[in-house]
Image (spheres, rainbow, N blue to C red):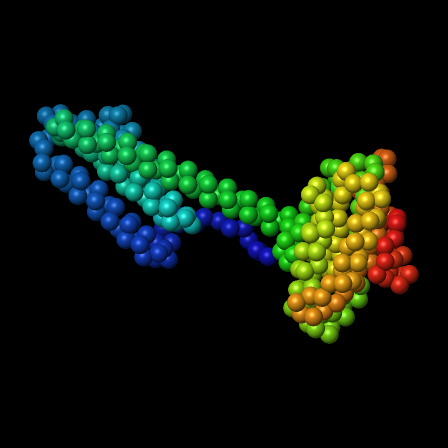
Amino acid sequence: MLKTPLTLSIHPSRFPSLPRGRRIALILLPCLLLLTAGWDGLSFEPLAQHHLYTIGALAEMINVLTLLFMFWVVQCAPLSRRSYLYLSVGLYLWLVSGVIDVMDEAYAQPWWLSRVEDSLRSLGMLATAWGVLLMVKQMYGTQIRLASLAMSDELTGLSNRRSFGAVLESHMEAGTPLLLLDLDHFKQVNDRHGHGTGDNVLREFGALLRQHCPPDGVVARLGGEEFAIWLPGIPMVRACSLAEQVRSATESLVTTDGVQVTVSVAVGICQEGEEAEALVKRTDLALYRAKHLGRNRVELA
């Protein structure tokens, strides 16, 4: 578990720790901008009256500084390779056009240079915008993966307790069956064969439940060797039959490690106005009875 939240550090002291390619990009950028400004100053005649202290020139300088800051942030950010390349190249072009624009306030630039400046700015903005789009897609994909991890059981890939609880709370309809399942004597499996084998048993049992669960059903691992199945739209008779099928299939299951287990199952039916917590508690009592009466059986709540 993370002790502190992930943060994006943009402090200048980060420079030595950046990847070599990014350090080179940061060093080359001011060199390129100085070269552009120097070439402009040496190639063209100064204006009789420069405009470097006007509001327009000040705004252009602020634009260049802002783009420089954006470039530094891009070098510090953990981006995908494509996002990084598009953003870096786009900002490179955009910054060169910005420097040409600033120099235009002091030197008599020819008409063709203004066309070059406009082209560089347009290409830079386009590449930067595409890089931003790729970055947003990367963030969205990361968010989806994290949400999936938060709502699923890492070992079996089934829904976890939190996800299953949310399903129950939002779909509590009278007559909907709930199955609670508990592998019998599972602690002995871990003690005799090791936890690696126990994990394999849980994975294969989870796959068995997924195989028997109807398309609209929800299978979850609640924790340890406890599982649950929510069966919306399934009548009680069909739920009891499914419970027996799962019990029988588990009894016949021989895992890849050669381990055999049995399962106790309880079937609870949601009553009118019943809350999820009450249904789970009532079904859990039936599961306890199944254990007390010898295990490897199905009990109705």
